[in-house]
Image (cartoon, rainbow, N blue to C red; front, top):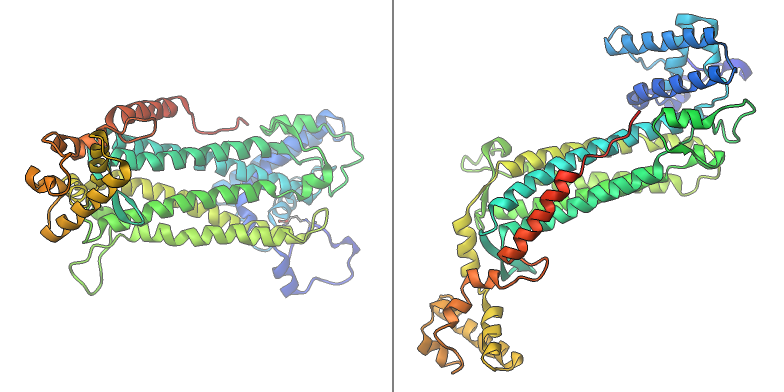
Amino acid sequence: MAQLWGGRFTKETDRLVYEFNASIRFDKRLFHWDVEGSRAHVRMLAKQGIITKEDKAAIMGGLDSIEADVDNGRLPISDEYEDIHSFVEANLINRIGEPGKRLHTGRSRNDQVALDMRLYTRQVICDTDGELRHFLCTILSIMEQNVNTIMPGFTHLQKAQPVTLSHHLGAYFEMFRRDRERLSDILRRMNYCPLGSGALAGTTYPLDRDMTAKALGFYGPTRNSMDGVSDRDYLLEFLSALSIIMMHLSRFSEEIILWNSNEYRFIEIDDAYSTGSSIMPQKKNPDIAELVRGKTGRVYGALMQLFTTMKGIPLAYNKDMQEDKEFSFDAMDTVEGCIRLFDGMLATIRFNKDIMERSARHGFTNATDAADYLVGKGVAFRDAHTIVGKIVLYCIDKKCAIDDLSLDELHEFSKAFDQDVYEAISLDTCVDKRLTAGAPGRSAMEKEIAQCRSYLDGSDPLSVDL
Ligand code: ARG
């Protein structure tokens, strides 16, 4: 048991209590950020004359050697330390002696952990954004190749009107574009530095909080020291954004699973992204999509956990806040992994374009257009709706599509039909006539794709300069 605070105690901590209290098992992943934060703090202490230049040099050398040894495996981060902060400080004192004891001047683990978690989260936000950007490139390249691929659009999972594969995927492009915007909003709001908040009430040392904030890539210091140590809003916002990303991925997964089913056969998932059955030799299962859909619950769980943990905490720091890490880390890892896998799966999917088009043809997806055609010939829309409804009933009985009927048959329902009806209700026409902004018509879609392309060309992934 190696801890930083024995002075006031007359008894050893109970072993179980120590283990219950310790966080090193999971906060070891903050190591690099902890060292980075200490470097900025020490430079500032020396500049302010709070520690000497010699002490600063010794501490910086010690931190470098600890970091190098952790990286090359010579110094394992072992569970005998209470947390990552104790690990670094104890090893520093062990290596350089007296100067090491000055590292924690004007700092508390409360502002230290608030800083480490923010630095780590900020990096993950940028990484997640990079994954999303790559994923958007994959979606867009499929969109570009499928402006003419007609498929049924659904409402209530019933065939509704014809759309194109490009248009359908364009909906996902918008979802993940918004997800990226959410990440940059969060980054803008969270990028303030809690270091210098001390335990809760700042410190009596003349710290230069602007200096440490700038050195660590923040816009500036947080404004209130009690809020600085106890604010976890940014994590809740990030977990919310991650939950929304997972909800989007889960909806997409659901479609992939349906489209890959024996009934739809719209797509075929590549062998590299499918799995077999131990008993049924014919099976090729969409496990990746199912797992992504399943892991959505896990990410929502992390959001609910932190909301619940935070709801009753009085100001300022309380140990409850240590519980901000494990589930959040899990959610961050899960989402990054899911985006990457989904991206790879999507990029290698084969689209059965003929089956998609046939499905649109045989689902009466042009019924609205047939009614609109009659409206063009002077029939009132409500009457046109009834006429086409009767035609659909007739076609269901005959097992054919509306455009398979002869003009004579159509005349049984309305004399307003003419030879030009076939052209008017062909799937190509149905799609192409939908030209309002955001609709699937070819020229509307081409404009949309050009906009998506210039968005991606101009949008660098989020990053913060250190
Ligand atoms: N392991 C702690 C956490 O994650 C670090 C802060 C400890 N501060 C304290 N006053 N015990 O929150």
